[in-house]
Length: 198
Image 1 (cartoon, rainbow, N blue to C red):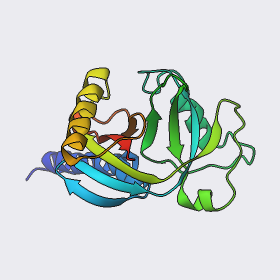
Image 2: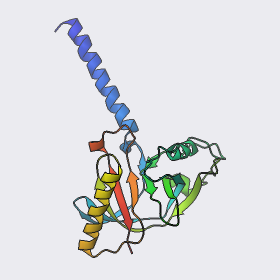
Image 3: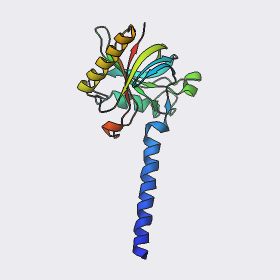
Image 4: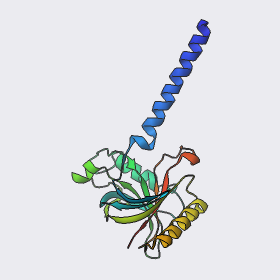
């Protein structure tokens, strides 16, 4: 084998390794995830029990998927824009609660367990607040693709039909959960729709 070919193969191998580790460090597997227990699993559907979760939240405009500045407000909070100037690790998923007649939609980052059990830094931005999301049982569907209105509506319809077949009664609006960074291709994305159960 010629020296030129060896150099090209070495460069290609280095590029593959760098891309692989770059992907691993920025993909969902690099982050702590909100804890839950699977009580029942049926293909892409699950019934889960979540504990109480401490979250940093902010208002989100309906359908914006964080493009309205909500994601960056929360990202700034975990990057040290808080009263303790403390960096807080990113977690998955990012939860998005939809607008209701009584409340604005909310985007929330789950705080890492270690931070939630110790001192939670107060946000510097008055548009960010810390709140507890009550635990409980949820019906969940996992789906891929971009979280556009058509994909969300289809997932929610499937979830509600599955709940009806199982005799499950929902309590509240659908909550969305996104696990991947924006650059993840649609077919590889992990998204979920959750409905709290009565």
